[in-house]
Image (tube, rainbow, N blue to C red):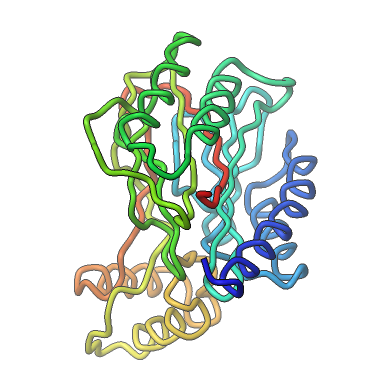
Length: 288
């Protein structure tokens, strides 16, 4: 890995360390998810980092892709299992992290399962190890707690301005022979559930990403595409970041049109298929 690239990753990690320390005490009863997400995002900017994607605050059976909506009234309550997923980038080089908290409790067996599984998988991520070996560690460790991994979610590579890159490392057992290589950057992302172990796409869609320019009649649509390329640097962005362009039904209509035209990709909330609780743990590692 080139020296300047490594420096970018190290700086992103350093900022994310501070953000993690800042964020954990904020997660408590009666805090609104909108306030929580905005405070974390502001902290990243304050520390001179880039926001790699909107802060995800997914609760209970929601595994991923919930970020607060505009004026979102949702507040944290005792007993909620909350996942906080955030990313910091420096010049497009991303450090991706996530952790889980059970409001009102010190911990929960699902959180312990995801954290232990993530740590064991991280120890195994070395040059020459094969994807199936890491996945087996993840599933076996979660099974030891009596839970299931979410089979259709993966750990993933990270590349410049690309949050999900090669390789994909499923949470569940497989036969993928692909080798991990020195210099790859991998987000080891583990999801444990007391449900069946699958997620499905659900509503709402609150996160989007630029795909390509398309001719669109509405001026608001053209402005959104331009903002996605310039301000958001082709990285995922939140619906709530677009209020300077338009709001309300008009914003929903424009975003819908842009997705139908394949100008934008939407990220629906991912919900555990059987309604099971989900815990998430994630850390980034540079392969030695």
